[in-house]
Image (tube, rainbow, N blue to C red; front, side, top):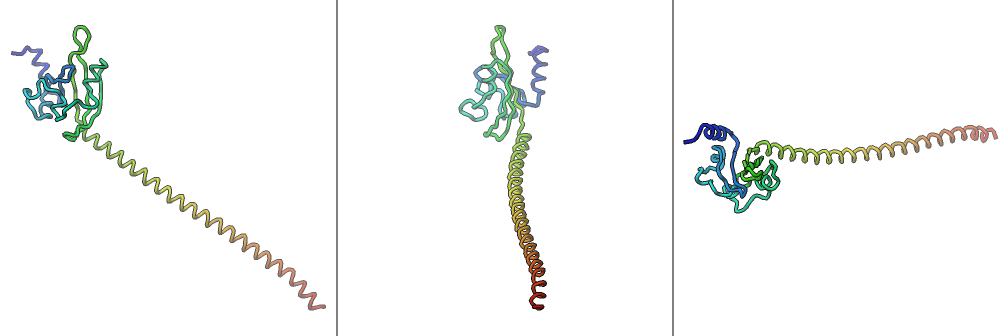
Length: 187
């Protein structure tokens, strides 16, 4: 029979919708809340005493382990990890429990499934990269158009200069040939 305090703890522990687990310092599972057993699709008997990484189908510890960091640092830790075995993203937090001597002897691990928000974040990053590529390509196209317009403007100015020079020469020639023509005709 459990005392009222134990029942209150278990009721609270099992009411939490995120996965909550209690482990020793070697990552052996002591217990999970109901959400943990549902996530793993395993019973309490199947998980008790097993390494946490075994329960998700791995042969060894995760590359980055929140429990190990909490044990070695003596501080709460928080990591985000992808679990390819079931295609989920988890925010994993680990909180150390100290014994009377102040040493870590248990770790509470809190796993929150953040797959939906990570998928959205990754899609947003992909869209941003695609948008950056489009902006770069469009900027390049616009620069090419600006260069072409600048060249056309320069050619037009040169053409106008030559046309103005031609009109000036024609005017000068007319102004010069009229008095010459009169002089020749009079002579």
